[in-house]
Image: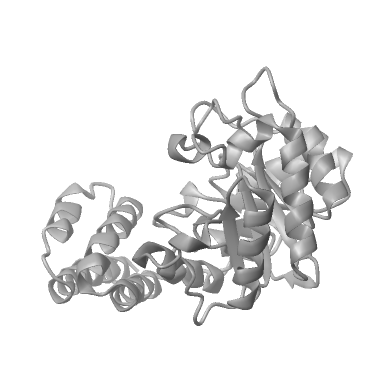
Length: 329
């Protein structure tokens, strides 16, 4: 069981917040398919920029299951505190603070994982945000700035002392970006050092990976990012495996219907032009999961100019994919 503040999550597998991926349609889909939690895409703490179309979409949580999580990025304690208050006023039920993003444009502003180099500032940020809101505040970090400065344990202790109610840890340093293999020894040490829930992140691609990571680290849950691309049903499979119960079997017709519904939700959320563009990314991932040689089908889907054409082509291909399975049975 994974509990954050007053919320007992329905699953120990949660969706990692990822810019350009974890929009509202994808969050709702992953929650429906077994994710215990799904945070918004990272939102700047500078509320003066919230009027842009991108920020307005990231602030839109209509129809999302509870608890609704808003992830904020910034480096100024009082600015982050005010952003947290405004987010709660708009319906956020958990505030997640990003100190794990390795992107240069984020770290260049001393945000994201750049904050790990200044433990005093980390404490001031966390204390300011926790004092500002009456909802749980959580934190996402990496193991440190680089391999010579793995201070994840110290940051975790600061987080607990500051009132943070759960901690997600990516098993890489900022210098590692997403290269090499995640290391879990630091996550294990963090779990031993604090009493708040710890969620392990990094290279968890299968239910078996999740079991091994939890067994080694003692973590309370796992956070899954890239493995969910084209496979949002992974959360239900992971949680079932962790609980030693059989996962619900998905037949191809169900997967087809889920994919087509996802496309329609993207068109409705973004409008046709942007929705078609965003859908191409997801269709590429779905094709990679469904066909051993996906390139001809992917190229056909990428060539669709509008929503109606894209949906028609997708329906034709996934109908055939589902029918192949029915014939084989």
